[in-house]
Every structure is written in structure tokens, then in C-alpha cells.
Image (cartoon, rainbow, N blue to C red):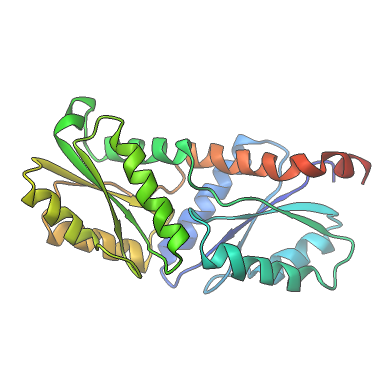
Length: 251
């Protein structure tokens, strides 16, 4: 196979919207790069599992592939879970070489996707100076991941928003509703919540519930299959292959 396949590894969820959104995203990635095989696997709850997807690649005669974690920060899943399951999955498959791509964030393309979703939710360019944004992520016990979200919020603030504050659905504080109320207490006229998550599920629902309960004026959709996310997946795929380009060509 001349073009190494892309294996997108998502977290998985009991919520059927999660897998449906991930599959919609991977279909758009495949459509954007004709000739590229794009497979999907899940760490939990959904099928195929990572071992099942890796075994399928090997059974189809694939010798090189890129495994891409569908994650926005380098937290526990990226640092521990995915490397471990990939090592276990390939241990008995010496003919298959997996190149692991970096996580998606942080990246300007993700900020552009957030902007797109806010626009789709009704914000206009002229609303920016009077609007405070709550950048609401799933949350992590990893301090590196929390620091990244805070840094994204600080940088995004410099693009003209009245304010941008980080919030977390789990593990860290503040919660979405607390960040919305804090902005309101500061006199911010319009408050928008931008979920920094790929697909629907338990934690994104918690973000949405907090936004509604605290009276946010705008709630953007999840990032999903936004064109910027599609472009970023393909960029990470290409970056994963660059260091081994000579090896791949000789395989």
C-alpha cells in the first residue's frame, strides 16, 4: 500500500452521538484526501477497539500506518493509555510499523474552528468587543493540560474579545457556570460559551448544562467535523510521516 493508512483513535462514549460525530469527521478526512485509507478505533465503549483496528490493518497487508490520537491536549490518555494499547496491539505484529501522530492541540486551526462554531451560533464580527467567551474544556488532572487551556484563553483574548476565560467540566476549576457568572459579575454584556471538545458526550453535556443554568447568551456547538479540524488531522498525519519518510519509501 503506497499511502500509509491513518488510524484515528477516539476516546469513545456510551452516548451514540459521540461515535457518530467521530465517524463524520473521519469520513470528511478521507474525502479531503482521496486515496488515503482512514480507519477509526476507540479506547472504550465503542467498536472497533484499538487492538481490533490494528489487527485489521495487519490482516490487510498494511506495513506502515499512522495512529492519530483524537485528543486536544497531551494528558493521561495521550501520555499513557494510547502508547500502552498501541505497544500491546503491535507486539505480535512485527510486520506493521505504527507512527504515532501528535495530539491536535494547541493549534491556530482549532481556534479558527472555535470561531466558526461561535459564528454559527449567532455571533457577528461586530459583537467581539462586547462579548466575553468561556473556553470550556473537558478538564484533566494533568496540570500540563490545564495550563494549555489557560494559555489558549490568554492568547485568544488578544484577538479582540472583551474577555476569554478557561473553564473545565471535570477535574479542574472553574466550572462553566462559575466562569459565566464571574464574567456577568464583571459587567460583561454578552457571554458566549465555546466548548473545546470534539464530540458530544457526558462532559460536553455538562458544559452545555452549566452554560444554560448560568444564563450564557450563546452556546456554540462542539468542534465536530469542522473543516479546520479536518485540515488539522491531515497536517498531523503528514507531520508523523516526515521523520521516517526515507524508511517509508524503501519499505
